[in-house]
Length: 253
Image 1: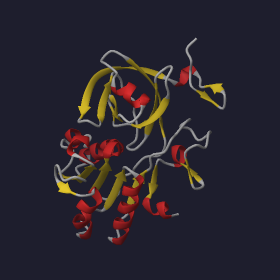
Image 2: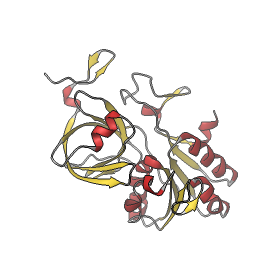
Image 3: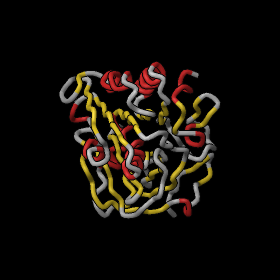
Image 4: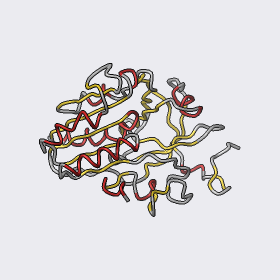
């Protein structure tokens, strides 16, 4: 009998999972990989799926693309390293999608991604592009080799802003500093972000100072994905159920 993940000591039902096989592995510099899987998982921009490997763990990942299902994985621990080592033909168990995602507001959008957080914004950029909206995507990382999904956004963004902490490519500094001039011009109707929480606080502050609405996707440890275990609490909210997308002003609370 297969060893399924447990919730409160009880195994999560087998029927909740769909089995996908890896079709393609796209390297993301030294940061990780994007896994293209062999089926669709219709999702809203910003929703996430739970990925599981028997005998290891189950973790949440943003739905980078839903047709076909694609996951962008930063190699930061044993489980994510195991996912990054998946080869074409090998299986991954998926349940979801879960959570509340982004909604487009206006017709000019600024999307700000830090590291693997960029994966939460790809479906949003794709949707905006299909509707004929203008999209600027700003991506940040510590170094050029840690930038993720630049190749993907080049297909859907009207313009890109690249920032690296060490100045190895693009703007030398944080991605929020790189977009301050854009925010000051009031060009976007709305701002969306995902990445390290310090970056999101800075983004929320800058967007607020410019009088622009801003939404952010929070990254938390999620054990269940459906609001039962409470491990992903955000004040009196649960990131997996009430988010992962929240209005940016809630970060201050």
